[in-house]
Structure formats: C-alpha cells, structure tokens
Image: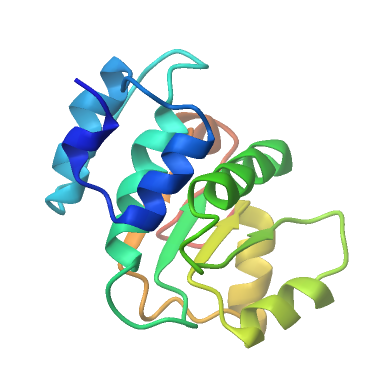
Length: 168
C-alpha cells in the first residue's frame, strides 16, 4: 500500500511526494481513513511513527474544500517546540495547497500572531496558555473550527490543562 491509496487532492499528494513519503506507517494506515470519513480518532504511537502526518494530511484534505481565510482547524500542543514541528509539517505537506497556518504560543510577542489571525488563516497550532490569552482578548475566533486536535493530550492534562474550564 502507498499514499496514493488515500486519493489525496493533487496539491496534497505533491507535498507527500516532495517529502519522500512512500509507504504509510501503521498509525497512518489505521488513522487516515477514519479521519477522512470525519470520525473521531485517538491514537497512541511511539515518537517518529508518523502521528503528525496521520492527522495533518486529512485536515489538509478537508480544508481544500470550503471557505478560506477563516480558522477551521485548531491543533493544541503542550510545547512551543511541538507546535513548531506541527506547523512545519503543515507547511511541507500543504506547500502547494494555499492553506495557511499560524503558531500560537507564549514567550514571544502576541502582536504578530494577532496580525496573522486577522489576515485569515485556516489552521492554528496553539499552546494552551497563549490560546487562552487570545480567547480572553477576543483576538481568535474559534466559532467556525471544524477540526480539533489535542496532540499529546495526556501530557497537557498532566500539566493541568482543562479545555472545558479554560484553565492552565
């Protein structure tokens, strides 16, 4: 089996090919079809097994259809390093799609993040603390988010993140 089996949009398939992906990993084989069908998925796999591509590829596929320049996918990650890695994966796999993503995390000025959000971005990769800052300030609109990913959710919960109560 190869990535052509998933029948991704040609612009996404180009990103897959450009990154040299040939054969899906087990987590990708098990996750991608379900995510493409709009099902909720919880996956657990070792580092380096392709978990990020397992959720990024179906997100890109979904976002190729529908409106642009509004936040439609939110990926929450526990650290800025992981947020940047996910953002880079989106950039590589989605290079030809025209879809835009932004990273949102603390320790840097919030103003460039606000500017990117105002210009219109389809995907935000956020750390919980700074995401809550944006929500409190009204600088991010999550009302039209279609896809939510909690990457390393167990780690965020261990760190005290509560999505429902807005605490971190």
